[in-house]
Length: 417
Image (cartoon, rainbow, N blue to C red):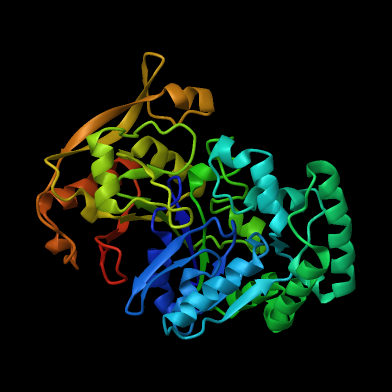
């Protein structure tokens, strides 16, 4: 199967990095198609633990190159810091290509995010993602390919500084200093700043295995998520065409990644959130703190209404359920199969934020298990109740669960079919 898409099926933080890193053992190319350094894809292997914000998780595997496509907004400083951390761990240098059409995140984007209050109102990562996409859509942003013309970059930054000082009283950068820094970045990267669409299209034409790595999750999609409490890019499978410029083939694997429970970072409705002891237990056992921000994640139980919606949007061919081990030790496990909404039981995900805000979960309570499953490596190693939990998800959604994560390590993964 020459194409595999790995898509977050919840509000992000589903451990997509773990799944991509595992699948990339057989891949030639791993392609990030959306988002920016607001992503926090964690890989834990023999070299240690590394949190990736821009480098595709698959690029850490020998023989798999990484592509940061034009749908991604790139912060040069974050990218260089990330590669420095990879080198410090003694890992082989990953091969990474950047799209010449990718928009840059500049210092003023973080400043604008703070001054306009977006971070406080929506709960963003404060990485300047939204303002960078805003400039892109307004056709006033700077793209990686533009760095080939340093005189135009300095002219752009000089005009930008004057505009920002007029609007906000400050710019957050000195044009000449920033221009010089961008020139050094371009000098180091110019051989790897490419037409990424052509690179990916050529790999597909040659029959290479290409993995498309999504950032964030379906419910944070700019158009199809819980607007306005969403990110600024297309996080679903449809983001591949938008962010890479190639079409996913009819026979591609589309893997939806979901935790065995649900988490959310930032503001917005969350029907299955548990603000009591249950949520605190999930946060503590699952180490639920943002890889990018360090903020504690809001935690709750598995929401099959939301997962069904994610499947409708993406047409998953299969699911990967991660962090199944976090549920060990519970007597019973609540699973939401419907919402109470205005006195009615509904199984459709609400279309408006107002409806979702007042939706209350209807739970089925499944039997839990006491065993520690971190050492399980095949389906028969799992307790009967854990296998039943997975089977229940498959039955309700009509989607096969092919992988189950039982810990953060790269080998703490069970292939179910």
